[in-house]
Length: 462
Image 1 (cartoon, one colour):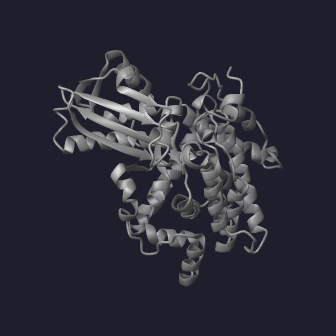
Image 2: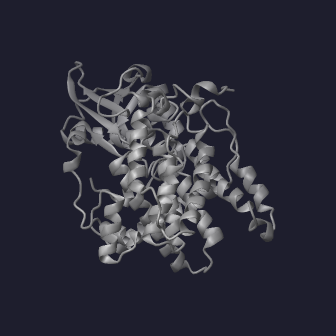
Image 3: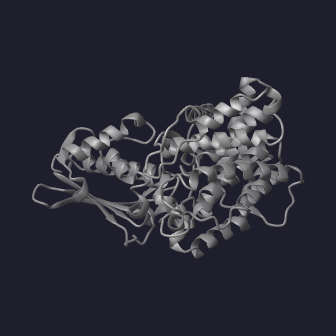
């Protein structure tokens, strides 16, 4: 399966890529298909069925909001995030849903959106089915979709034939070993190989422009998160902390700001800011998931503010592009050979993968060779193996927000460790990815985004 870097870095809305972004895309695609089949005007009712993890933690992750917005024609990258709560409240109060924003049908939230908490569709833990019904109750069209992590969506038919729907890339790779071999053949860096493949989708200039825009959205989420305060939604009464941390750190002198562990305070701030924005259903970049959306922006901000010395805009842009292309190439390996879905493999598939991607990106922009970059990625994941996903209250607040700070710090350390060596190491990245996948298979389902184990049941809900 061939993947573009822009499938791993997608502008979207919080709080979850698999539970919010993916279901919104699926719902929008469903109603578009109904319209294309000339069935929209005959549709008088829509039923939504959420299964498995989407049912168990979907309300806390905004899945109900996402599917309703998607059915109304909204998309994660363009929806006005400031209007979401009003629109959702209006649907519930008026008991009406406007398919594609125009065709109005009755919709009773408690009746037409059904949670099947004890039922998992066989293909994937994040399954959903939409049914369009006629006035007499006859089924006009039904389709199941699976949110497979990072906002990726496959219909039931696509899931069965996913190997046949990939775009052929000129220099495709299925393992880190193969990635390094192709780079050696062409004397390319990992970023240069990734760029050569992206040119199968669009021009190099467009790739650079789009990647710089991705960073600008990331940077904006850091900036906005540093200036918001109050309590995050969901009922846990988790207060935003980034704004207070930002005020304190901003009072530091230049000498204080650049010494010792103060740099890590800033790094933690960047990650906190992004993931508080995510929890508040703000605009963020899925990287490669929403639950781990703070790791890569924080790692890039660390590089921009504390490592990158020449203040030349063009050079900085080139470095950010190199970071994202390198990180994207590493993310593709996890997507192809394991998973980036916490519902499949636990949080090692989210924070762990983001940490590995960020480690590789940091090694690349600090002059690492391909072997050092692969080593950094390996270290980044190796020390996240077995990380569970047990969100308290089914929300992306505890432990998810702080976990992004830890993932970023690990990434910085992983890159430094790799750059201190020559790239040779005992455990190859491919072995770590294989181990991560097997660990996810062995992990009990209660630790895979169901909120049925771990902190989700042992923490005190205040």
